[in-house]
Image (tube, rainbow over all chains, first blue to last red):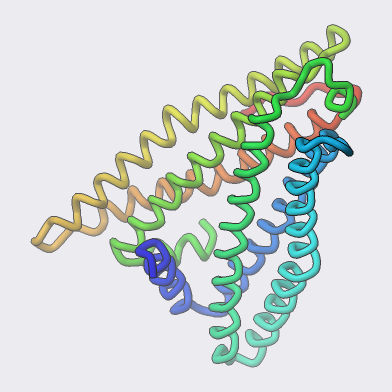
Length: 147
Length: 141
C-alpha cells in the first residue's frame, strides 16, 4: 500500500465519521463532477475525432485514444452516474428512516470508486494532452478550423 | 461554506496537510489543462474584426487565470503546505486556531476557484467548438 493510498483512506475514514446529510451533499457533489467530466470528455473526443485518419500509423494512435475516451464516457453514463443516483436515493431514504448502518458501507464504496474514477480521468486527460502536444494544430487544418 | 468543507476542517493535522497537497496537484493539473486550451485558442482563426475581438477576450481570460494560478494560488498553497509540514515537528501543544483558520480561508478560495475554472473551461469549449464566434464572451470578474 502506497503512502498516498494510505492517506487517502485516512481522509475517507474521516468523512465516514460524519452524518447522512454530509454524505448526501458529497454524493451530489460527485454527480456534478461526473456531469462536468462528461462535458469535458465530449469536447476532447471532438478534437481527437477531427484528427482521425484511416490509413496511417498516426491514425491508429488517434483511434486508440478515441476508443479510450468512448469507453470512459460509457462508464460515466452507464455505470457511475447510475450508481451515484441510486446511492443518493438510498441516503434520502435513510434520512427518513433515521438509520445509517448500510449507508456508511455504500458511501465508503462510492468514495473508493470516485477516487479511482478521478485518477482514471486525470490519466486519460494527460494522455489526450500529450497527444495534442505531439500533434500540434496546423492553422491550415481545415478540420480544426471548422470545429 | 458547504457542510462537507465544514466537516473536513475538523480533520486531523495530517488530514489537512494531505488535503493541501491534493489542492497543489489539482492546481498544477488545471495549469496544464488551461495551457492546452490556451494553445488551441491561439490557433483558432478569426475571420473578421468582431471575431478577432472575441478571440482576444478568450486569450485574455485564459492568460489572466493562468497567471493567477501560477503566481498567486500555487504560492499560497506551497506556503501553507510548508507551514503545516513544520507543525509535525513541533512537540509542544499547538494553537490549532491559527492553522485551521488559514486552512478554512484556503478551502473557501478553492471552492470558488473550482467553479471559476469550470466556467472558464465551458466558455473555452463553446468558443473552440463554434464555427462562427457569435457573441463576445465576458471577461472574468
